[in-house]
Length: 390
View 1 (spheres, rainbow, N blue to C red):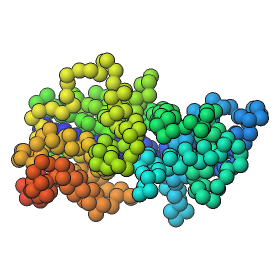
View 2 (cartoon, helix red, strand yellow; view 1 turned 90 degrees about the vertical axis):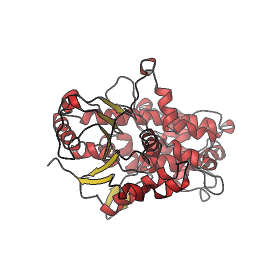
View 3 (cartoon, one colour; view 1 turned 30 degrees about the horizontal axis):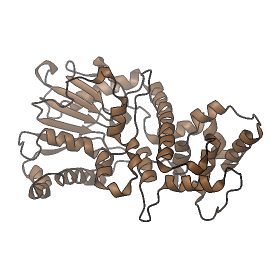
View 4 (cartoon, rainbow, N blue to C red; view 1 turned 90 degrees about the horizontal axis):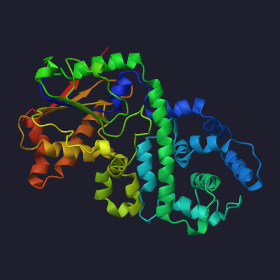
């Protein structure tokens, strides 16, 4: 296959047996993180004890350990878990971040409720109005009081967002360390084999020296040269950061496309959590170069292991715009997938349709946007391919 842009998501790493799902991480925390264990066993009583420790100087805990290993986001994600047929189903981190920031019809959000709850608690153990607020809000307010000794009366939404943003970076560092610790030789071997499959979907194993191959990864795992078959890759980029660096480089966030589309549903300081804003903040002088992630002369876009959810629509819109998807009849999109126990074909097909239709809605010509999906099908430019490395 010549001139390929390969886009990979977490399904790639999972297929290579890397335990990189949110479920994997939270299960690890449940077994390895002492504060997860304490909370899962004792619940809110552990938070009350921590407040007593601060107010009465009872040194029963390692405060630094607590602050590093149990953030507001940890508590939010724990209280988002569900039980299905006796099994724990952990949440989607980025969806929960978005849900917590989004305003409802009455102009409230989860963090607005937490802010108000903190202010009405007056830094005492007696939480007035417990029946008015959900247990989750009360718990988050308790944890906030545990962590921050500030003047709560002057706590506003923007300052609240700054504090929970800093807590998110602490959570990200722990997630990064976890992923980094799981990368091994088995993963690298499987990744090389899967790259070989994905660069040869048309049955043509073209030598890399004579073709253009670019990889855009939504994963946090680094790429080694010996993982790419048929020669070196033209370029490889982890759009959300990479593990294994001295400074935590990975990001969780919300999509700019969603925030821009529904401006009224987000407080202005929610921009702290948008992926574009976060990428700008992480840019270093060495990153300022003229090289584009998107290369000219690409005629095949291969997408594998990506959920195609709306959290990354901004990236796909930019890619499709760059390659003029509507009029560029030489451009093919390959949706490659591997069946597994949680794979539902109808949901995957629906995700493909939603992605293309959502992109069509951004085109200046509304008529072009409406028929884009049908046009690509009629021109045989959408291709579905099942692949495996087993």
